[in-house]
Structure formats: structure tokens, C-alpha cells
Image (cartoon, rainbow, N blue to C red):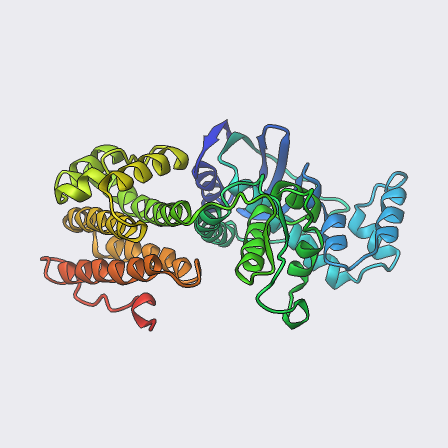
Length: 410
């Protein structure tokens, strides 16, 4: 089998799924600008991957986590010039690392490469069925489906993190008056590494490039350090409370609406934007006006600008505007879920609610305490409860849907 073309959004996920399901053996090459990755499959399992990105290289990962020194890495790279072995085997032969460490980090390298390419928004791909040569390489055996699920979780969580850290050009510094002394913090090795890179000359993008960590890990760690009051924006470029609130709400409901409309569009045969437009017509007038310029297919920045303008036109204090926006999105979700129930099987309703539940689990974490967060969780819980009731009383639907982790949380 030969496949090639361009991809956008989650299409690359579908390619990986296809290669896994069909148990293909061959090589998948993926590129995005100057970034290139190669993934090798054997009978539908990922056995090896390599990337042009420096932070994804095995030596960089081992150095990042303190398992080898800079001198040892330099020595191994020098030996590589006159040797056909991989850098991992050279490090092993020089007894700089153990075989267990080599196996663990070879697998971690492949995982990080896969997570990285699944974050790419667009690019090119080419897959060719072929026998693969892995002489001198450390083989892994990874199930693509598990990686896809974890990547999806990271993407959902990343949308909330970028709602709070809105630009990779932000620069952070140590806070003048942290909430508690540095010695009172119990830092992870990742936090220690990222904290060591905090400087008034380094942007978030610089930290990503210099840390050897992926974007998700850096953003999540920075958020943790910001929330602890340990670091702050050095240029006063933090989004104001209004922007953070609107970003946060919009990010959550964009993810939830994508979950609902994906299934509804497939079964109704209608385009997603048309489905949302029709549902908006059934909202109360004030809610419909708030969402009148919201389009699920639009870029996040475009929707953010449109929704923020609509909320401010509605008037009132910031909290009132945010609560109106939440009510509007909840109403939209409720209508779309009600339209979905008669069209799909019970297990598909189950899948939709489970996915929404996962999004709400991330909401529990970010931000720490806010009226908006509490209202989103409470109101969406009511929407999902009502959906379950509708399923119970819809002919042909199974009556047992008491399964959600969300409803076990206090």
C-alpha cells in the first residue's frame, strides 16, 4: 500500500489508525516545514521512529534527565563519527548507561516523536509498504492506539493551557514576592529544569527549544510555576482577567462542541456550521446574540475576538458577561445533544458523554478557583444528566447509563 498527500487537523491520527488496523509493515514519513519525522511499522506496531528535531534525539533526552553528562554525550557523538552503531549502543558500550535505561529511553524517544507530530496542525505525509531494516537500532513495540489516546488527552489539555499562556513570545521571571519560599516547594525534575531556564531574555519558545521538552510539558510546567506564584510575566504581558476568562470558556466549549457535532454531522448528513446555526436559532435571544458570530470552523483568535465583542455589547460586569457566555454555550450543547439522541445508537451517546466528561476533568484543574469554572462544571453536569434522562425515555435506548466519573466527583 502507498499513501501520500497533505494533512490537516486530526487526519494524521486516521492514517496511524489505518496502519494499525491493517497491520501494515513499512515506513511513514511526515514533514511540517523544516521538521521531518520517520515512523517504522511492523505488522501494525510502531517499532522505531526518528526526528530531525534536536530535542527528540536520544542523547538529548538522556542529557535532559541527567542520566549522562555533557562530557559523556560529547564523547559519544565524537565516537559516532567513526562508527555505524547508534548513539544509544555507543553510550551502552562505554558503560555510560545500562541496557534497561537504553530500552526505556528508546521507547520514550519514539513516544515523544509521535506526540510531537500529532500536535502538528498541518503538513505532508507519505507511507510505503516495505521491509524495514533496523540493524543497530533499539526496537520498541508500541501500540499506536494508546499513543493516539494520550495525544488526544494532551491536545485537549493544551487548549486550556494556551487559554492562560496565550503567546509563546511571553517572557517570565522569578516573582518578586512568591507565595512561599523556594525552599518550601517540592519540585519535580522537570520543574527544576524549566525553572533553571527562566530568565528575562528567554521567551516561552526559547525555553521549549533549549529544554529538550515538548510544548505540552513546558506549558504545563510553566502554568504550575505561575499558579504557585513562583514566576510572573516580566513584561506585564499577561492577559487581563477578561481575556483569560473568555479564552478559558471558549476553549472548553470549542472542544465540547467538536465532540458533539462530529457524531451529529456524520449521522444527519449536514455540515457542522449549519447544524450550529440552526441550533442557535432555538436559543433565547440574548444567548443567540452572544454566539451570532461564533463559528466552530473559525480560528480560535477569530472566535475569541467575536465572542468578546458580543459579550461586551451585552453590558454588565465581567463576571456577568462570562456567565452569560457559559449559559449560551450550555444551551447550544443541550440543543445539539437533544438532536443527536434520536439519530445514533446508545453506545454512541455513551461515547459522546464520556468524551465530554474527559474535557470537564481538565476543567477541574484550570484555573484553580473561579466562579466560571464552577458554573461550567455544574451546568454541564446538568446538561449531561438531562441527556441521560432523554436516552432512558427514548424508545430503543438502553436504560442503564449511570457510568460517568464526573458524577462521582464532589
